[in-house]
Length: 414
Image (cartoon, rainbow, N blue to C red; front, side, top):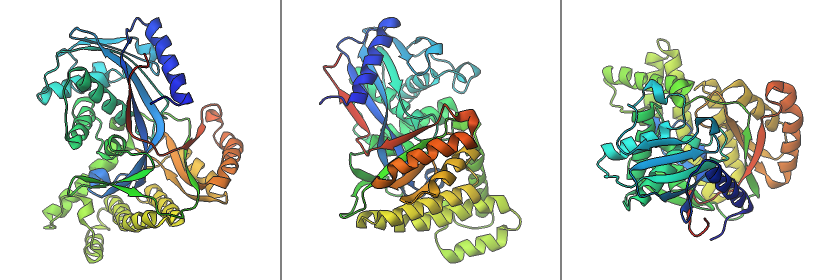
């Protein structure tokens, strides 16, 4: 099982970083975790909706080996200024403390803390080097890193967790309970369960995952990620946290008024939706706008899923676009650079749909594009984006992505 050309380049870089920083990874393993591309419902996970997406080929690679001590020693090629992050098992900073706020080390600290809290007895430290090419907003870099660290540390300690949803829970806890980021489980599910060439469908009521093949005869298309070059802070510092709080506030208001709902996804019936909007829309317009997006996106979700099964990628693209307009106008989670990218590609024939990705504010937008229109998209973005956003003229990127396995492990490469 060999590496791609891109993977080999990443491994070569990791080897150099290991040598330069005194990290011993000889005869170790390489774990590769993916990014993700959500087709629906973005921001639906913490609102209780069903989810659908794919794992995509922008990755975090981690080369590691057990070191025979109780010390973890890690270096990130993406954050070289932090130097080697080194700590003993059981000795990490307190959750959500100021000392972790500005270092990527909060992720390995958090993984060790959560595994220990949940009763997993770690006795074996690791040496490791990490490098990734996932854009810093919209493709779930933090979830990919958390999963990679969890799986690698469990492996080094010969601990097997057969229930993959438990691993999802652990990864979410790293961000929620240790870092203070209010993420849901969309990202972790789409990465951990991601399968090459398949869509991943998650039903929260059953906590079940099914794989959905794209129907025969689908138009040849590509998943395109439009990295705006902007840097989004962690979700704990973003509009995401505000929006999640607003959704929870509306649920609380509805419960106090006698509505039997536990999350916004419980508002599925149109008559119930109309009743709530009539009763609360005037008093809480912003909160009800959040419901407006979730209600419409949830109804579109089932249409999108059936279109995917039928190979009707044009309809999938149209719904992706409608979701983007809802995220922009009703959920109000997008950002100016994200919408600039959407505005540019929307004008190009062959672009089936486009919208912002991920937590919002900054980061990346995405598009579904007919294969024959890819070069036109690259050319249009290359001309228009630097003119519209000159401060990011040397930072943006266009990524043409494939659907891949979310997690792979390589042995015998080091």
